[in-house]
Image (cartoon, rainbow, N blue to C red; front, side, top):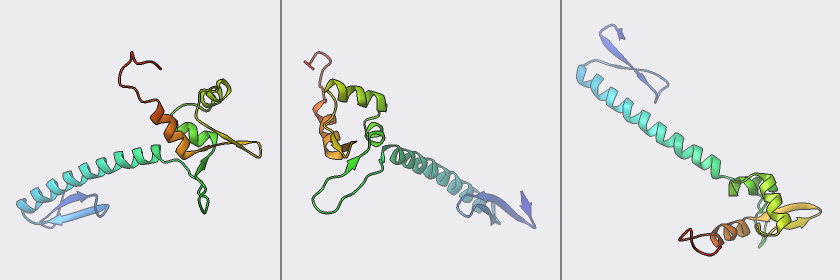
Amino acid sequence: MQMRGWDVVPSLAFTGFCCVRSKQERARAEVLLLQLNEISKEFGAVWATFKRLHVTERRYEGSMTEMLKERDASEHLRVSVSTLRRWRRLGNGPVYRKLNGAVRYAALDLQKFIEDRARMSTSAAA
């Protein structure tokens, strides 16, 4: 695209267009745009991972630990809520607490549950 002797290059940085005069400037602008696109893709992937791993946490003041609802705990462990309930019923899931009738999981208990299940071999005793 040209505009009165200027080459117009799409620019994500300004969500518009950037005007350059010479072929060198245009080539440099295209390289920068490609680099910006790559950075944008990498950031998008990192952001998606962060959002997937991030659990809504409830923080309590003092020495209390973070407590998660069933849904948040299941997202953290990447299992369904029904799987978490089945584990609880069978007694082989993570430690939980009943607070006024509501099931809550401590974030530290979930981390310990994950770490306790680390295996080096498929033949290792479960």
